[in-house]
Length: 100
Image (cartoon, rainbow, N blue to C red; front, top):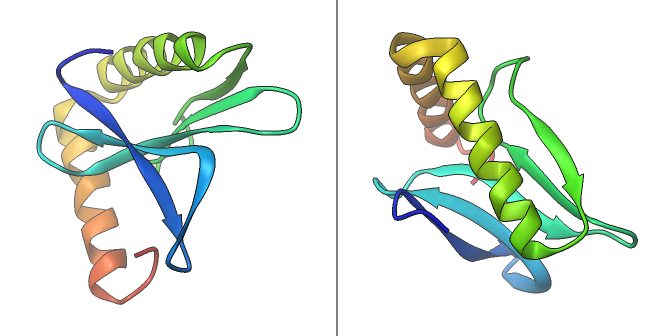
């Protein structure tokens, strides 16, 4: 896993679930999620943008690698300005009490 991000157990309703993680960037922002469904590991970039990638993998390590590739391609595609706007949109949603 790169130094730029880390995994933290997902907390929903005060509870953590096994094999369910949020992806946190170096600045402490949630940028995605990786979790095990019934049949595969699912990864998704969690920013408000229709181009935000997601996919499935056979293992957690494969999901982390796929997330990294997806994140790099996504950020290169949308650029710094759109990335900053996406983070601002997320902050506005959280400020209104949604998505926390």
